[in-house]
Amino acid sequence: MPTKGRLPEPAIEEGVTGKELDREVWTQLRTLSKENAEGVAQHLVMVAIRLAEDDVDGAMAHAETAVRRAGRVPAAREALGMVAYRAGDFARALAEFRTVRRLSGSSHLLPLMVDSERGLGRHERALELAASPEAAHLSAADQAELAIVVAGVRSDLGQLDAAVLGLERLVFGPVRPWSGRAYYAYADALLARGDETQARKWFAMAATADTDLETDAAERLDDLDGVTIIDSGWDEDAGEDADWDRDAEDEAPPIGDQDRGRQDGETHPATED
Image 1: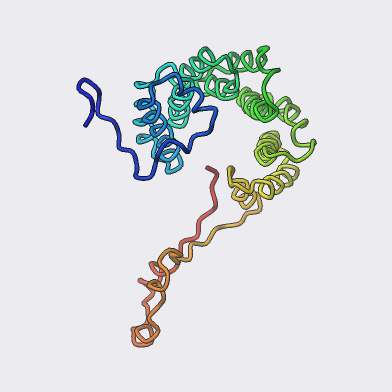
Image 2: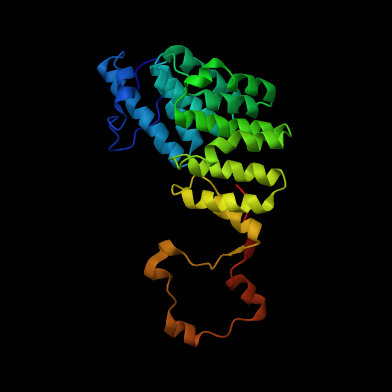
């Protein structure tokens, strides 16, 4: 039962203990009572679970609960900012990311702050933020993410050559964990500039490097090649129950022309997310 005066909290899934969080987050939670720290940890884990399920509303409920219980814990504010960012509420996301920076002294969310400014249509402010002194102290991974975001801002402003040039140091260096995303952004910038041949090359490289399927590089490549995706109508999850009853099939009357279209799969072009 919720404590008197406290808003009802979203349910925690069975088996979620909060111990799934990494040590750094638990270090932040040590400022809370043991009971509260454990509860907040469970809600933070649920935020990640709901986002993985694309349940943004569910994730928001858990993130807001975590912030109500631990408003000065950077991890809780970051979780709320992430959910707001996923929901496209860039003003709220930016406010939460700023709070995280103030509470923690870390600028690791700078790429998302820049992208939030971009989402709000404040492109010049986004570029100013990206050029702030804090950017020089980001990790290599965060600097790569920032370069990708800045390239998007440049493309929005019609600065297509600058978008391409800004990504070259990423794509022509050694392969890194973020290379798939960098190749994709570079291909997108090249395509916007009208270089379809080179764009196809880099979309292909992105599709190969993107083993975690973070991008739709394969679909973009198919689109450039004019490939269409055929829906066979086969349900892989149905298992043996989806097999045709061969005896029934032999006894069934022929499918009429007017019904055949409903049996055949539809053909449609692959689209960009």
